[in-house]
Amino acid sequence: QVHLVQSGAEVKKPGASVRLSCKASGYTLTSYYIHWVRQAPGQGLEWMGIIDPSTGGTTYSQKFQGRLAMTRDTSTSTVYMALSSLTSEDRAIYFCSRGRYSSGWYWIDTWGQGTLVTVSS
Amino acid sequence: SSELTQDPAVSVALGQTVRLTCQGDSLRLNYASWYQQRPGQAPELVLFGKNNRPAGIPDRFSGSYSGTTASLTVTGAQAEDEADYYCCSRDNTDDHWVFGGGTKLTVL
View (cartoon, rainbow over the protein chains, first blue to last red):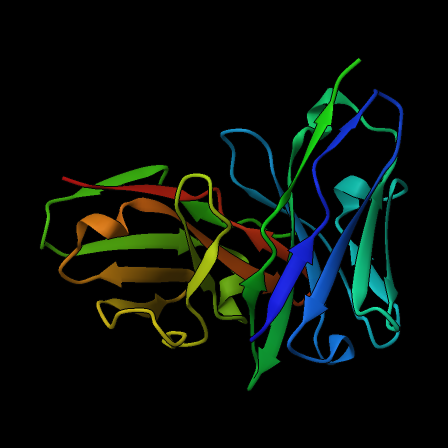
């Protein structure tokens, strides 16, 4: 069974950085892309970016360019998302999710449980 | 990057049919996927491609398209269908993905 298990909640001060992890199980990490999506309190889903675990190649939303980095460790089937220069606007639940592609269709079929990031002085 | 527009809130009587819509230029070239999110939970895929349901999703959920608008129809809405629904699509111009703002579905 496919699972994405995320790291625990984080509390950070403004200006700090945070690094979240997402461990995949039940499939080969390098076979599917991983997205990071966040959700601020009471708000909708916001796409942050995507990583191809087979190559390490990334595409980021322009909103996060310069302060977002996605990496992977294929030996542990884990993907990481680092966000720097945190502000109160970055307080959100961060989800990793598995991207799928077939027959010209794109979709996300599996989600992690989410990680709450709180930014507070 | 493109945008996807959804109605913020829609209500439906128990057992009746409701259509949720998602409008955006990226849908001219790519199908939308739809996600259900209940309070305090991660999103869950309910529809993808032209009209495909993952295993375990009831057949009362169906999809359709017209131009740049994708629709998710719930035929015979049940109390457990009350949730937020998000559409999502990939933008071929820049390989970015985008979510709609979400629709809060209330089952009366």
